[in-house]
Length: 167
Image 1 (cartoon, rainbow, N blue to C red):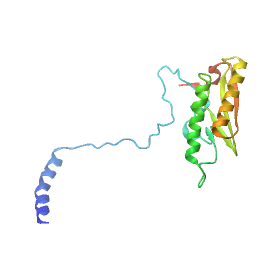
Image 2 (image 1 turned 90 degrees about the vertical axis):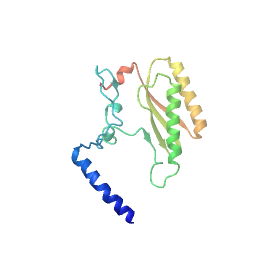
Image 3 (image 1 turned 60 degrees about the vertical axis):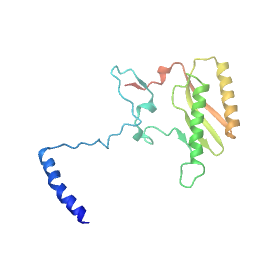
Image 4 (image 1 turned 120 degrees about the horizontal axis):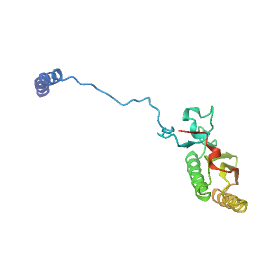
């Protein structure tokens, strides 16, 4: 104990001398800045945004809706992590199967034992190929998910038809 008293007594005047010689400004990062889920404005303002993308995250439930509709995230519900992983798999499978055709976000709605997937698709392929892709996607996803999967697709002639604004 005596050693600590002697050490702190001899170090105190040195620390006070150093503080009195310099004045310093302490800064910290702004903690209230909300950046996630927002898109940065480009200099040419040529980045297209859909209506879903144009609304910031705090408008979920007011001007935009959730991209996944399910009840697995409620308290004491079953398999919330599996549902989230399945949703990621479904989105990646749809964007890979319908390559460069999906114009909007993919909305996944789960009701009882069925999964409904909604999206906006470009009319860049023939109707025959589109019907084949719909059947192919529904069959494979129904087999993998072990429940009925239906696609609810809307088509647009051009991707610019979905653009809400440019930033």
